[in-house]
Structure formats: structure tokens, C-alpha cells
Length: 153
Ligand SMILES: [Zn+2]
Image 1: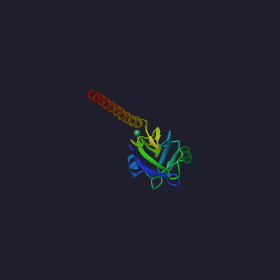
Image 2: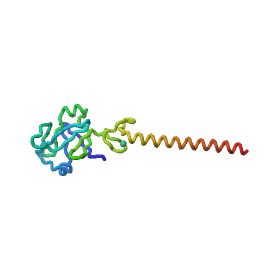
Image 3: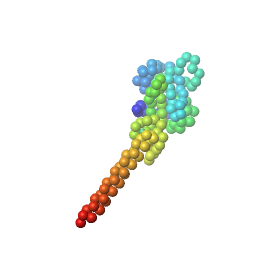
Image 4: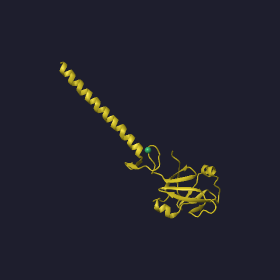
């Protein structure tokens, strides 16, 4: 379930995709509540009286991600991020953290610098293990055959 890839602009702003704005009825000048869950930045329309972190959407559908958040999450200049919808939230995660194989966010492992999730790693190891065992079995059969034919001579 890969989402939409976007770059943060040099001023730390991100453009909310039009279809997301439409889905959630987000309009220009709306205040967007911003909160964090681990490495995921979650956004939704701030309700009246909301006292947390919020940013106003500009006329181009952009909002500025808080500088502290960008620093804490180690966002680079023009960081590439992935956006997706989960429940009532628009979620943002640093691109490159999702599994190279299945796209699951929060890949727990890295292989040659590529993020891979636990499930895919186990599956890949299983495939390799099966292949090794099949080969070992074949070799064993071959050597048995060899022995059998030697005895027949
Ligand atoms: Zn995976």
C-alpha cells in the first residue's frame, strides 16, 4: 500500500494532494492539526478549540511542517516523503523507510542499504532455505544413485 510521494520544499512545506483535500473536505485557510506517532506525522482538520500544533493551509494547498519535527525526524532539505491515508488521518513518512518489497511502512531491517520488513526477510530466508534443502536432497540422491550404479558394476 504505497501512497503518494512528495518532496518537502526548501521552506519545509508540503503540498497536500488534491484528492486527499477533497476526501477530507480540506479547504484553503483551514487549520490542520499536526501530531506525531513515532516516525509518522499525522494530519487532520483541526476542530474548533484544538490546542495542539496546527498549521494553516495556504492557497496552493501547502502547509509548513514544524521545524522541530523536521529536525527530530532527521528530514533533509527537500526530503522525499510518502503520504497515505490511515483512518481519519493523512499520514506522512520519510520515503525510504518503507519495505522495498511489499511497501509496508516501518521496515525493521536493512539489506545492502535497502529497507526490508521482517515478514519479507523471513519469507526470503525461507525461499533460500528451501532451495538449499532441495539442492542438498538432490545431491544426496545423486550420490546414492552413483553408489548404486557402482555396486551394480
Ligand atoms: Zn515487506
